[in-house]
Length: 232
Image (tube, rainbow, N blue to C red; front, side):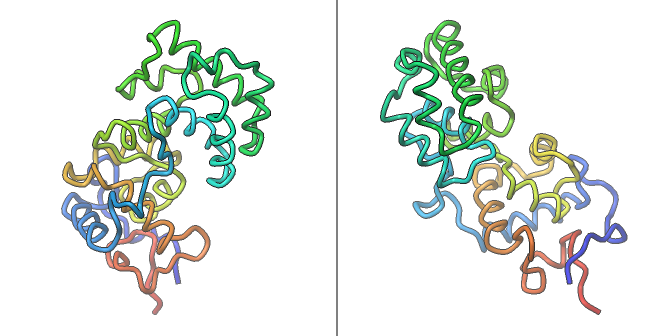
Protein backbone atom coordinates (compact mmCIF):
# COMPACT_ATOMS: atom_id res chain seq x y z
CA UNK A 1 0.00 0.00 0.00
CA UNK A 2 1.03 3.64 -0.29
CA UNK A 3 1.14 6.08 2.60
CA UNK A 4 3.15 8.91 4.03
CA UNK A 5 5.86 7.60 6.30
CA UNK A 6 7.75 10.08 8.50
CA UNK A 7 9.86 7.24 9.85
CA UNK A 8 11.71 6.92 6.55
CA UNK A 9 12.67 10.58 6.35
CA UNK A 10 16.37 11.28 6.59
CA UNK A 11 18.17 14.52 7.44
CA UNK A 12 17.19 17.32 5.11
CA UNK A 13 19.10 17.39 1.86
CA UNK A 14 19.53 20.19 -0.68
CA UNK A 15 16.73 22.75 -0.63
CA UNK A 16 15.10 21.11 2.41
CA UNK A 17 14.44 17.78 0.67
CA UNK A 18 14.24 14.48 2.55
CA UNK A 19 16.63 12.87 0.06
CA UNK A 20 20.37 13.36 0.00
CA UNK A 21 22.20 14.79 -3.02
CA UNK A 22 23.21 11.33 -4.32
CA UNK A 23 19.65 10.04 -3.97
CA UNK A 24 18.27 13.07 -5.79
CA UNK A 25 20.73 12.51 -8.62
CA UNK A 26 19.63 8.87 -8.81
CA UNK A 27 15.95 9.89 -8.93
CA UNK A 28 16.53 12.16 -11.90
CA UNK A 29 18.71 9.63 -13.72
CA UNK A 30 15.98 7.02 -13.43
CA UNK A 31 13.36 9.53 -14.56
CA UNK A 32 15.55 10.32 -17.57
CA UNK A 33 15.71 6.61 -18.41
CA UNK A 34 11.97 5.96 -18.06
CA UNK A 35 10.19 9.20 -18.99
CA UNK A 36 10.11 11.21 -22.26
CA UNK A 37 11.94 14.53 -22.44
CA UNK A 38 11.55 17.34 -24.97
CA UNK A 39 10.19 15.27 -27.84
CA UNK A 40 7.31 15.94 -30.26
CA UNK A 41 5.09 13.76 -28.07
CA UNK A 42 5.99 15.58 -24.86
CA UNK A 43 5.44 19.22 -25.69
CA UNK A 44 4.95 21.81 -23.04
CA UNK A 45 1.34 22.54 -22.09
CA UNK A 46 1.65 26.14 -23.28
CA UNK A 47 2.88 25.35 -26.78
CA UNK A 48 2.40 28.81 -28.30
CA UNK A 49 4.38 30.45 -31.15
CA UNK A 50 5.61 33.52 -29.26
CA UNK A 51 6.26 34.78 -25.69
CA UNK A 52 3.14 36.95 -25.53
CA UNK A 53 0.73 34.16 -26.43
CA UNK A 54 2.56 31.76 -24.17
CA UNK A 55 2.17 34.21 -21.29
CA UNK A 56 -1.53 34.79 -21.92
CA UNK A 57 -2.16 31.06 -22.31
CA UNK A 58 -0.55 30.43 -18.96
CA UNK A 59 -2.66 33.13 -17.34
CA UNK A 60 -5.78 31.51 -18.79
CA UNK A 61 -4.79 28.05 -17.58
CA UNK A 62 -5.25 28.88 -13.88
CA UNK A 63 -7.95 26.61 -12.42
CA UNK A 64 -8.82 25.40 -15.91
CA UNK A 65 -8.61 22.03 -17.63
CA UNK A 66 -6.25 21.82 -20.61
CA UNK A 67 -9.12 21.30 -23.07
CA UNK A 68 -10.92 24.40 -21.78
CA UNK A 69 -7.75 26.48 -21.85
CA UNK A 70 -7.15 25.40 -25.44
CA UNK A 71 -10.66 26.46 -26.44
CA UNK A 72 -10.25 29.83 -24.73
CA UNK A 73 -6.84 30.58 -26.25
CA UNK A 74 -8.03 29.57 -29.73
CA UNK A 75 -11.01 31.93 -29.52
CA UNK A 76 -8.99 34.79 -28.04
CA UNK A 77 -6.08 34.61 -30.45
CA UNK A 78 -8.50 34.57 -33.36
CA UNK A 79 -9.29 38.13 -32.25
CA UNK A 80 -5.82 39.43 -31.38
CA UNK A 81 -2.26 38.06 -31.15
CA UNK A 82 -0.29 41.06 -29.84
CA UNK A 83 -0.65 43.22 -26.73
CA UNK A 84 -1.33 46.27 -28.89
CA UNK A 85 -4.18 44.51 -30.73
CA UNK A 86 -5.54 43.08 -27.48
CA UNK A 87 -5.83 46.55 -25.96
CA UNK A 88 -8.16 47.56 -28.79
CA UNK A 89 -10.69 44.91 -27.74
CA UNK A 90 -13.48 45.66 -25.24
CA UNK A 91 -13.11 43.79 -21.97
CA UNK A 92 -16.51 42.16 -22.53
CA UNK A 93 -15.38 40.74 -25.87
CA UNK A 94 -12.26 39.24 -24.30
CA UNK A 95 -14.34 37.76 -21.46
CA UNK A 96 -16.75 36.18 -23.94
CA UNK A 97 -13.91 34.62 -25.92
CA UNK A 98 -12.21 33.09 -22.87
CA UNK A 99 -15.42 31.96 -21.15
CA UNK A 100 -14.55 28.21 -21.47
CA UNK A 101 -11.57 28.54 -19.09
CA UNK A 102 -13.56 29.90 -16.14
CA UNK A 103 -12.99 33.04 -14.03
CA UNK A 104 -13.26 34.80 -17.36
CA UNK A 105 -14.17 38.26 -16.04
CA UNK A 106 -11.16 38.40 -13.72
CA UNK A 107 -8.88 36.93 -16.38
CA UNK A 108 -10.11 39.43 -18.98
CA UNK A 109 -9.26 42.32 -16.66
CA UNK A 110 -5.83 40.81 -15.96
CA UNK A 111 -5.13 40.33 -19.67
CA UNK A 112 -5.84 44.01 -20.33
CA UNK A 113 -3.71 45.08 -17.35
CA UNK A 114 -0.93 42.79 -18.58
CA UNK A 115 -1.11 44.19 -22.11
CA UNK A 116 -1.16 47.77 -20.87
CA UNK A 117 1.99 47.17 -18.79
CA UNK A 118 3.74 45.51 -21.73
CA UNK A 119 2.89 48.32 -24.14
CA UNK A 120 3.31 51.33 -21.87
CA UNK A 121 6.29 50.21 -19.78
CA UNK A 122 8.12 47.57 -21.83
CA UNK A 123 7.65 48.52 -25.46
CA UNK A 124 5.47 45.47 -26.07
CA UNK A 125 8.30 43.05 -25.21
CA UNK A 126 7.80 40.16 -22.78
CA UNK A 127 10.59 40.13 -20.15
CA UNK A 128 13.07 37.26 -20.25
CA UNK A 129 13.68 36.99 -16.51
CA UNK A 130 11.66 35.48 -13.68
CA UNK A 131 11.66 38.77 -11.80
CA UNK A 132 10.48 40.70 -14.83
CA UNK A 133 7.74 38.21 -15.63
CA UNK A 134 6.48 38.05 -12.03
CA UNK A 135 6.26 41.86 -11.97
CA UNK A 136 3.54 41.67 -14.64
CA UNK A 137 -0.14 41.75 -13.57
CA UNK A 138 -1.59 38.27 -13.01
CA UNK A 139 1.72 36.40 -13.43
CA UNK A 140 3.09 34.25 -10.59
CA UNK A 141 6.07 31.94 -10.23
CA UNK A 142 4.44 29.04 -12.07
CA UNK A 143 3.59 31.07 -15.18
CA UNK A 144 6.95 32.80 -15.14
CA UNK A 145 8.82 29.50 -15.06
CA UNK A 146 6.62 27.96 -17.75
CA UNK A 147 7.36 30.86 -20.10
CA UNK A 148 11.08 30.73 -19.27
CA UNK A 149 11.21 26.99 -19.94
CA UNK A 150 8.87 26.53 -22.90
CA UNK A 151 9.32 29.85 -24.71
CA UNK A 152 12.81 31.04 -23.83
CA UNK A 153 14.34 27.55 -23.48
CA UNK A 154 15.84 28.32 -20.07
CA UNK A 155 16.94 25.53 -17.75
CA UNK A 156 14.04 25.82 -15.31
CA UNK A 157 11.80 23.18 -13.72
CA UNK A 158 8.33 24.69 -13.91
CA UNK A 159 6.05 23.44 -11.13
CA UNK A 160 2.44 22.59 -11.92
CA UNK A 161 0.04 20.40 -9.93
CA UNK A 162 1.67 17.16 -11.07
CA UNK A 163 5.23 18.30 -10.39
CA UNK A 164 4.28 19.68 -6.97
CA UNK A 165 2.65 16.38 -5.97
CA UNK A 166 5.44 14.16 -7.28
CA UNK A 167 8.34 16.21 -5.90
CA UNK A 168 6.89 16.23 -2.40
CA UNK A 169 5.83 12.59 -2.42
CA UNK A 170 9.26 11.43 -3.51
CA UNK A 171 11.06 13.63 -1.01
CA UNK A 172 12.75 15.86 -3.56
CA UNK A 173 11.08 18.75 -1.75
CA UNK A 174 9.17 19.35 1.46
CA UNK A 175 6.83 22.20 0.62
CA UNK A 176 3.19 23.10 1.10
CA UNK A 177 2.79 25.25 -1.99
CA UNK A 178 3.91 25.09 -5.60
CA UNK A 179 6.03 28.25 -5.37
CA UNK A 180 8.03 26.84 -2.47
CA UNK A 181 8.36 23.53 -4.31
CA UNK A 182 9.82 25.46 -7.25
CA UNK A 183 12.32 27.25 -5.02
CA UNK A 184 13.39 24.01 -3.35
CA UNK A 185 13.68 22.15 -6.66
CA UNK A 186 15.90 24.91 -8.03
CA UNK A 187 18.30 24.20 -5.15
CA UNK A 188 17.95 20.43 -5.03
CA UNK A 189 17.90 19.31 -8.68
CA UNK A 190 21.26 18.60 -10.32
CA UNK A 191 22.19 21.14 -12.98
CA UNK A 192 22.17 18.55 -15.77
CA UNK A 193 18.47 17.74 -15.00
CA UNK A 194 17.09 21.28 -15.12
CA UNK A 195 16.42 21.33 -18.86
CA UNK A 196 14.14 18.28 -19.03
CA UNK A 197 13.25 17.88 -15.34
CA UNK A 198 9.76 19.32 -15.74
CA UNK A 199 8.94 16.93 -18.57
CA UNK A 200 10.16 13.88 -16.68
CA UNK A 201 8.30 14.80 -13.49
CA UNK A 202 5.02 15.69 -15.19
CA UNK A 203 4.99 12.50 -17.29
CA UNK A 204 5.83 10.48 -14.17
CA UNK A 205 2.96 12.18 -12.35
CA UNK A 206 0.51 11.37 -15.11
CA UNK A 207 1.63 7.78 -15.77
CA UNK A 208 2.86 6.43 -12.42
CA UNK A 209 2.54 8.77 -9.44
CA UNK A 210 -1.06 9.68 -10.12
CA UNK A 211 -3.05 11.65 -7.58
CA UNK A 212 -5.54 9.13 -6.19
CA UNK A 213 -4.06 5.68 -6.76
CA UNK A 214 -0.32 5.93 -7.38
CA UNK A 215 1.25 2.79 -8.84
CA UNK A 216 3.70 2.40 -5.96
CA UNK A 217 4.12 -1.37 -6.11
CA UNK A 218 5.54 -1.28 -9.63
CA UNK A 219 7.22 2.13 -9.49
CA UNK A 220 10.90 2.31 -10.46
CA UNK A 221 11.48 4.86 -7.67
CA UNK A 222 9.74 3.08 -4.79
CA UNK A 223 13.03 2.17 -3.06
CA UNK A 224 13.88 5.86 -2.75
CA UNK A 225 10.41 7.34 -2.31
CA UNK A 226 9.48 8.89 1.06
CA UNK A 227 5.77 8.34 0.42
CA UNK A 228 5.76 4.61 -0.27
CA UNK A 229 5.51 1.99 2.46
CA UNK A 230 6.08 -1.56 1.18
CA UNK A 231 3.43 -4.11 2.07
CA UNK A 232 4.59 -6.37 4.85
